Length: 392
Image 1 (tube, rainbow, N blue to C red):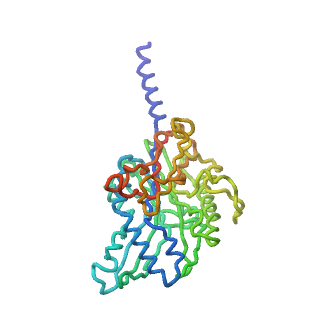
Image 2: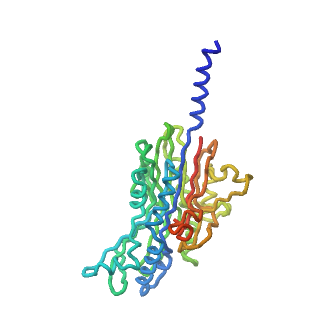
Image 3: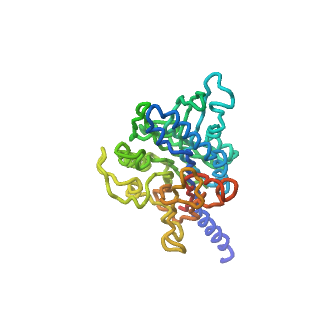
């Protein structure tokens, strides 16, 4: 009897082990726009052109093409099932008639700035990933500026995107969030709470948004949201203070959507991205149009989401604990020799606590990750990427 039962017992154990070993590997990566736009936003009319050129010089000096290759290498080496991109900017430029090829957009001071981050990332990943959902944040088209006596028109677009590894891409599709009545933007949504900043060119609306993808990994359903919430204070002084309320409203909108938007039974829901809120922000509420709200991190935590970094092996009491996982920020010019990361705002939330969090780590936080020459170049982003392998 025992000789007949042994194969069945072995098969049952193998099947149980296979089921329990179902995992999803996810990663969030802020690609960094390459400059601080605050001087442009706050410039008086007579200085706007000068500030635009300075910003483009900063972007070009940040070596976006080289940085994007380093970021793509980290993705290729990690090979997550899902990659969420923040600040996937696109800078483009149009010369005015009669401008020589080496002037205007072609001026060597700024020509390196004109890169489409998302298209470059897709190219660098060489077919290993498919973009399944995007949301357009702010976009500016045809902003005039002068450089060395020649005029040109600048266009800037900021997007977040969700890329899925090619071997599971056939099972993946953008979640039709617009059916829920959101402010549709590409395959995603822009938040209802939007900061409007007064500038010399008129009021500028800084959009933020979210998108989501449903996919199957080893036959199990997952839903992955990607987002980039507004910063705590977009510009200095009283004019920027309302963004502390706006980012809380954005977090509340996303948490509610993630909790309530219909999904297949058994779907594991994840929220990834730069939430511009650290666990140390606490729970102190601010008054908002929908009632008192705590900081974004606390909104997700109090809505039932688990910050998977807190389940990382050894994070609390292992060797070297606490493993704080600071993911932001390097110096604006990315040239600091030692890593300057000081807060944890790039987060992976899971609505159901995983049975295990395996191999959760920061990527791009080591000097070896810098652009060439090794150890002496620039950081690939002002943020480290955060990745985790989750077992449910």
